[in-house]
Image 1 (cartoon, rainbow over the protein chains, first blue to last red):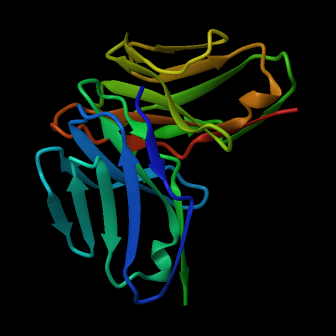
Image 2: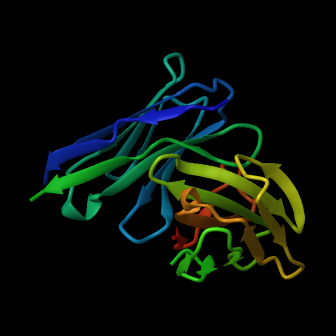
Length: 110
Length: 114
């Protein structure tokens, strides 16, 4: 079955870049996603990447996909305190349901 | 605000009981998904409905069932509750109009089984 892994915690100083990493096992993934979960809230889609792309940039967010190594990363430039949250990577294959990683708790230190 | 509503926000019950969680999708979305978020299992897909029909099934226990009604709202029924069922239950909806199938998540129902 699908297995998506992330490191559990990341701390960065305000203004630095954050890099959150994710590995997955299903080579048939079609789309890969990054979701953000703020305390007491549901998940919100931040960005996504199609599996035939290597990189996608969206304002402060850069997604890198290494399909050979099944490695996905999310870089947040100029990290702010409002970026403190749990970040989930997720994949989908032919079906529409999502398989989520364990989530990485990002703490931004002022 | 995602446009997906879930009730109740919190639910406290005892082992062996049965509860029903309710979800109203975004206006016009035909797909509804249920997910369970627990400390030990992470965020897991349970089941998907599309326009009233079951579309996909994940790690949903036999004690759990769901349905989607003609007005597209969905209910997740959890019975013979155990302590380990304590978790956050999220509903998400999507319209299926984009290739990347963005799912919009509700705020969740926090279930505590005592």
